[in-house]
View (cartoon, rainbow, N blue to C red):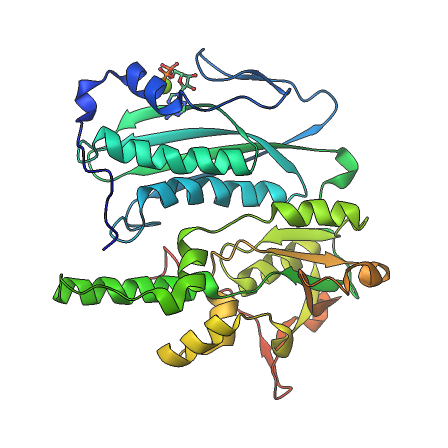
Length: 348
Ligand code: ADP
Ligand code: MG
């Protein structure tokens, strides 16, 4: 569906492994003082002086986590970096370095890897992280990408999932459900394309939600904003699996309960209209859809005046004693227990 602009096909076997790594990484620059040694030796060397170091890894597997029939490789490279950085921001930390490991089958020419690395490079630039190493190997099946993100944070600024208390407010950034509905649109177009390969999908009405799926961003701006507002959340998590399961993570680890208000859940108008088109309940999508990469956090009530006028934030609930349980309070004011339903990967 999405045209591959890079039409040349240079087999990977034309380059040795080292020439390939050199070729793919030659444009990357080192910007951080904490990077003492990047690519080129047996290991990288970092120096964080008195900062605490945050490390997070993700593994992405073709046809489990991404589908190359609608995911351009450049977007995939970008997204693979962003989803890792999102985990670092969720600790209230600043990402500084990444490593990138790939396993590729000979189905991929050099040009495909160039596209992948162009996306990685774009993300590294925008989020200001140094590429400091990785590993390259072959695969008999699809493409695998594993990225490790490293970041720094001052000790007293670290935000865990386990710090919230009853009466704290539950806050979310941005809006929810768009990435999941973007995926539904792309899946539908893929089926149409299978039946009629000459069909040209008109994705124009779906620009926002498709972009949220194919080119998500991590909320780097929020970490800065919280600092400026002098707000340190009492707990924080990024929304990768859906609001419901992330709330449950915070509640379980903090040993609290929660009331989430359905009417407060922020939805983009594009999500509401595409949910109507697909006859899916938009609350269900926000609760279980996932891949929004927004930040979900709790604050003590005394910090509320600092965030209340800010359009980046929506207060969606508040924390209760553990015995009260975790509930969605619907528009009709009935209470439904929250379930971790995530629609991804392991669910058939
Ligand atoms: P080793 O044999 O010690 O594993 P490699 O030849 O795999 O070393 O790697 C050489 C250098 O290139 C190392 O600094 C490694 O971190 C880096 N590197 C290898 N693969 C990648 C990759 N896909 N992306 C970025 N850097 C890589
Ligand atoms: Mg190696």
